[in-house]
Amino acid sequence: MAAFAGSQFIAFFATLRRVRTFDHFGDYATNTAFSAFHDLSVRAFALYHDGIAEANMSRPLTDLVRRMMYVAEGSSVGLRLNASWALTHPAFSLCRDRFEQCVRFSWLARQSDAREWYRYIADYYLTRNRLKHAFRQSGIDPGVNLDDGLDEAPPHVRERFAYWRNTPIDQMARRRDALDGITGSRVDREALFGFYDSIYRQGSSVSHYDLYSINMLGLYKGPEGLVLAPDPSMPTVLALHCAIFDIIQCAEALAKSEVPPPAETLDGLIADWWTFVRRTGMLDNPTNPQTAPAD
Picture 1 (cartoon, helix red, strand yellow):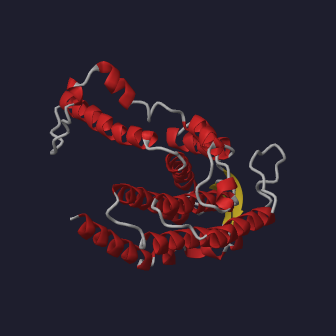
Picture 2: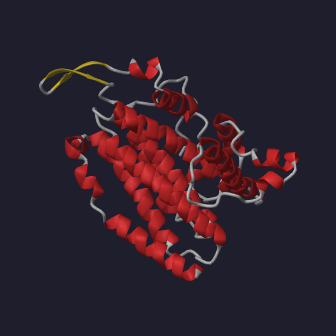
Picture 3: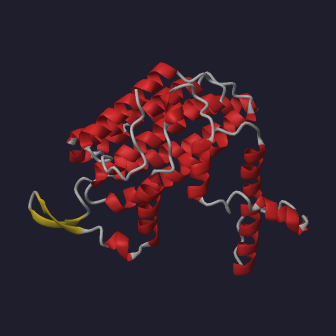
């Protein structure tokens, strides 16, 4: 049964790669900087798909990694499709999601034992338990059985189940950066904590619909006169961040699936990313802790 499910996943991912989604980018695809970072994301996921096809599909962890990467790729594609002048706000919200996905996945992937993975799985049952009570209180029939017996567990056990969601994302990013890398490539030297303020905090403003996100709008000269829109460079900024999150997660997903990551190819992706970043000048602020590693 597991082998059959694995073959279905491979077939589905192969189909996903053939979907001509990116034909719908529109005119913004002609932006050289945006296209460069978009291409890095495409290359990263192509590398991941080629490698994961060689993984041992009978390993439960490999199946979980593939499912997590499915969500990651869907979020990345959605971000890049929305990264336009008109849809910068939803793209920013998705970039916030990609940051959190990458941090949480990398934190798990870099662990030397399975303790954090067990906590991650435990959170699934806590979520189901909370949904069960929420549906019951609202009088809604969820249509599925959400009772896993967690109500009968001692209070201290239920509290331990809440560990995963109670860990702040900035704290997790900082701890992740302190762990040893697992890919044997330049990916291992890329930090994530530095993106917390620039991406997570600002993206959260969009999600929370606060005034900061509203005031991202300004008047800019468009093809037919002045338009109300975010900064015209913002789509490139989002694609830039999306690309590094994609490269890191794709590389570590292969390593965690016991597929040797191609270090030379990954080194090339990181080198290209930093080359494009330098050309844009978008991370040149000396106060930004995210700086290019020495070659």
